[in-house]
Length: 289
Length: 290
Figure (cartoon, rainbow over the protein chains, first blue to last red):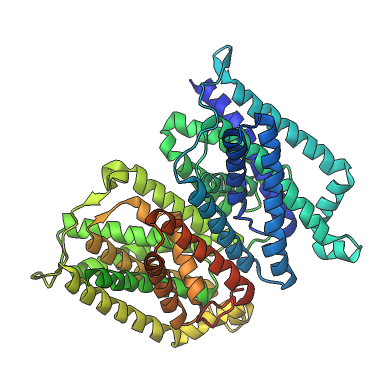
């Protein structure tokens, strides 16, 4: 039982890592507390639902269209809300509140069109394989392999590609990047696009397994934020480590108490980290006061 | 007629919530996402006082204020060491933990089943406040007292120091003020009065369950303050009236109820985005959010 829960935790952790990485891409570079990321995550599931169920397209095609539309939504939000605010030099709290506004609008627009109830993509029980004591469904296997592959590819790109170097430069000093002639607006566009791409993949993989409702984004966003904080803000490996820790811890919480206490465990962990080690596991000591 | 009175009572509750939250958001620039937790703690402690301890109204109010103040100390002291996003996150974490406890500790709070049949409060042990008109009078009196207290507070030396901390913390520090203590006081006062809103809500509706005090409610309270305006008393009052009256107006325009709930949320969301873009001090506020 424990091993099975651990395996589930690791698989869930890989999804958390992927989604948290998308959040970190925006937060580490622009310091935007991107609450609308919750809505972006949820939006992707509903787009898969629309094209797969309503328009009867093949699953893979529906996925691709959903990813494109989700990236487009993210870029639209950046261009209409975040960029104008950044040009006005609005404070981070103002950006955060606007982001809440965007989240509220998108979530309720979806709820208005699709209803509040849970919708499922895959009505059949998924096939599974048995490895020793562990039973894994094919969807779970897809979840862990796709997210791990994307995470590894991203980390390699971050180290070696030009885009990765620019991203790290932007994390370190945005003003200096402008001085050296880097097109910040374009970089932001790429970052918002890539973050939405990660959200869309994670969202699709989860939705195919357990379905969706308009409010799935918020818990996922909160897990991402906690993953980023306990890993360490500013590092791109951090949300990956944090994501796995949360995934495993939540399944241990199921084992020790019950699934109802998962959130309490996650947020107690967050508060402990904020108090004792606000720079996170991988972060260097810095002033947050 | 009762419908109109009901709206007035809800406006009174929300004015208490927004005016108290403004002390943090508008006066101290502390963006707390945990205010619904204090609202809920107030409501549940009120139920404890009225149903189990069988206390009259005034001791209930005092006890609720003391308990919510103690809880707020528990949050304020650690979270005030953090700044910006980290402070927001700490209060958000507290909000979610309180909600999870209210929801899951079934033997204490009956969890998702809620607590029905909350008795009407008794004033001086004899006058029972039940029915909509006595409630309107009670909530209006409490609201006016609290607004008066906050009006005095904003214009008191404490209010001025608090504004000083908000605008330039280091300057206030260099004048020899204890900045942390000032912020903690703001936190404690704000939460204690929010607890009173919880009492009014619990006794008026006579049924509470944890979903009335979840993260959405916390965001809603914050949105009401920011839409109305921050930094003075007028702003939050306008915000409370706006968020309570708007859905009723939408209903009169003729949207079906199923759509109206989402539509009003969309209006709040758009209002937040547009205000943050063009008018960060809100409709009637004076402090531009930093």
